[in-house]
Image (cartoon, rainbow, N blue to C red; front, side, top):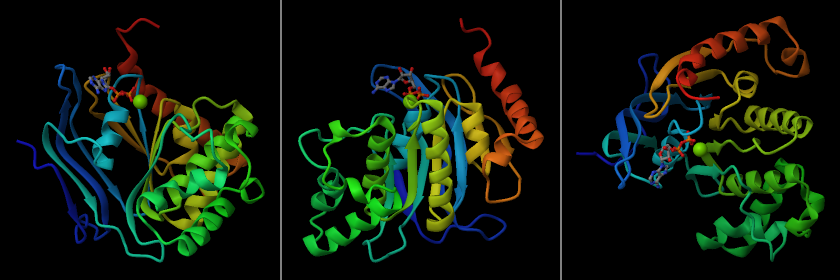
Length: 272
Ligand code: ADP
Ligand code: MG
């Protein structure tokens, strides 16, 4: 029996750091019998930037949906720390999907405002929050633009602003930059790192790109093929803040090699 999604605000790891998310022996079996995930053990500390890296279909999105509380584990437990209460009202998680999923009939501002509208946040508070989120993603000048007027990268920035507008403690990102060209992706990677440094959110970032996972995260959790489990955990230690120097460094190449090696078994036996 699953313990379902529980909240805890006092959990800490053996070193005394606050645990933001923990999965214990968690599995997910869908109604059609597909064993999608686990059993998986995973712990993310408050303020950490962690990537979940694995092949397509291994259960990465399933893991994020469990953490977001959008789906319940079939067995095991999923715990998410209660939000710290802030001026934004405190919210446990913000979710950024692979597709920007914007409402095409309305403006950037209204798209970003949606979560506050759903939470019945008064309009004066909401306006200030939306303005702040638009500044955070660099889109203030496009507040009144419509999605069709934006590039792919800008649409993704709107999606990120919509996730940030409730000031969540934890940001869950599901392959958000996978559809973007490389230069745009690199810019968004840098902007995301800058945001993470200034906002100190916990970020769980799903990707199937070795290069992206190493560039962004403090820890890369490499998953096996479906049903996904954690095959390896690789810490990325380098001087901060990271920038283009890191991307072209021998250290970066070394970490990418290490992560690729850990990932290789997940691809063996499946056709290319
Ligand atoms: P990933 O994000 O790593 O590509 P997913 O978590 O989306 O993987 O999916 C893991 C497995 O579960 C896949 O085989 C997928 O087809 C299956 N799956 C995902 N969602 C559902 C669902 N709602 N019902 C049945 N099977 C699903
Ligand atoms: Mg997915």
